[in-house]
Amino acid sequence: MFRQISHNLIPFIKPTQAARLLCTASTSTSEGEKRLAEKLMKHFSPGSQVKVVDVSGGCGSMYQIQVTSSDFKGKLKVQQHRMVNDAIRDDIKSMHGLVIDTKPA
Image (cartoon, rainbow, N blue to C red):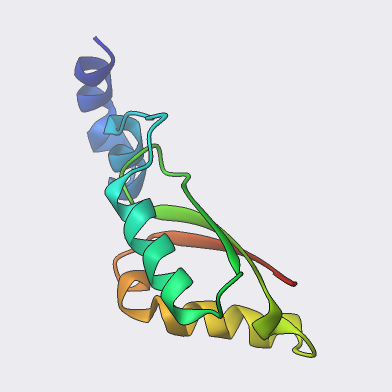
């Protein structure tokens, strides 16, 4: 029923909003979350902690990323975020939004 109702609303909302309405939330880790987490773990030094959550409801259009790494020591927050962006640069091109939280270990 929800999908039927949301299809009727599509002409009145933006395409990105429609995509979010049609997505269903999942409690399991999505392929996008796994892919991004693996890339980030490879990019940062061993012992780094990475958490990736698809906040778009499973569509893969918006992610929240938390990284704690010794690689961030002595770096400004903007430098830390650039390091995360560099690690997943190709993936970012297909995203609608991204929230990054970084902390030095």
